[in-house]
Image 1: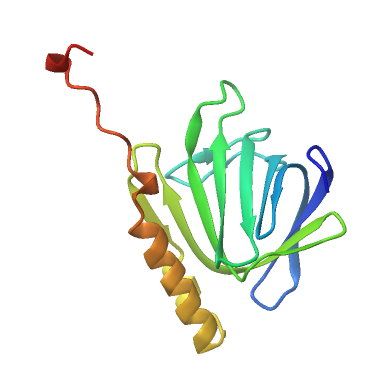
Image 2 (image 1 turned 90 degrees about the vertical axis):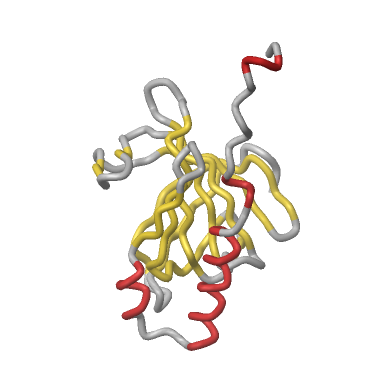
Amino acid sequence: MQASTPLTIIKNDFAGREVWRYEGVLLERHPDRIVLEARFNRDDIDLEYVVFRRGDRFIEQFYTNRWYNVFEIHDVSDDHIKGWYCNFTRPARFSDGVVAADDLALDLWVYPDGRLLTLDRAEFDALPITRADRRAVLAALAELTSSSIWQKPPAPNPSDGV
């Protein structure tokens, strides 16, 4: 696959049943990761911590060797970054223009200032999944919540003459 290749993204539930399908465009292809761009294709949804609006731009990263995917979300009106939405999933599968992943309910929202919000923990705890899957997801959560990639660089100190 080359950049600009159209892709179909399929979100499955924990049992592998399709729950949502949408289109995107390949931006980058790596041996264990795909980066794509997609537009939010549903009516506006107010989730209390963010509003997803029809047409919001998503830069999505799917991995074949990690138990999550990460969506960088840009506002449809001015393209500012709203934050990052991390879905905990089984590793993604790539084939013939299709990206598929099995969603395991747990999510992480990262605000632009680096604050973290873990979502849907009770739903994750109730899933009938294997202990190995549960351990892998919790290890992935620990990885993302302890990561410094979400930290904003310190603001310049005015006394430094910046």
